[in-house]
Each structure stands twice: as C-alpha cells, then as structure tokens.
Length: 95
Image (cartoon, helix red, strand yellow):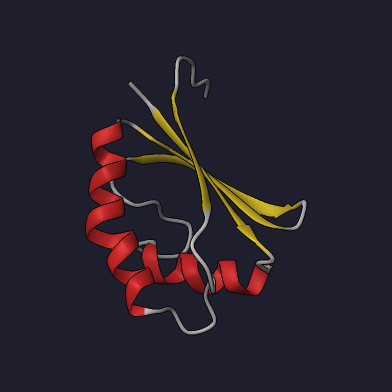
C-alpha cells in the first residue's frame, strides 16, 4: 500500500528546501528508492513537502538510512528545525 508523508517546516524558505533536498535525494530530478512522487512549495507560514512512497517500509528505510542521518549531521543552508509531520496510509494514488 502506498504511504504518504507531509512535512511542514514553519518559517522555512525555498533556499532551505533546495539545500535540504539536494542533500537527501540521489540527484537532480531523481527520487530516492521507493519514492514515487515528490512535490514541494511555499505554504502558510513556511514550506511544505509531500512525498509518496510505494510502501510504509520504503519510507521508513529512506527516513532511517538517509533522511534523519543527513539532517542530524546538519545541512549547510538547510532547514533549521524538524518538520511537523503527517503520515497517511493511502487508499488511492492516481498517475
């Protein structure tokens, strides 16, 4: 079952997003293994990222092996605080 993650970073900027995503994605225009969708943009009071993974397990692998270690090391110019997170077991994902 597909699994969705919504991260809202209060007070964050496009520049912080660009630095952070460059540190955790495998390259420009490429998604991490298991991620099938990525969208991001400014939202009320900050920046929001929406990611869909092919399963909860692929999200957890990415989170535990890539995302958290990189963010805990610190990303120069990246997000300054952890996000507000919403996780969703997705019933429908349309292409």
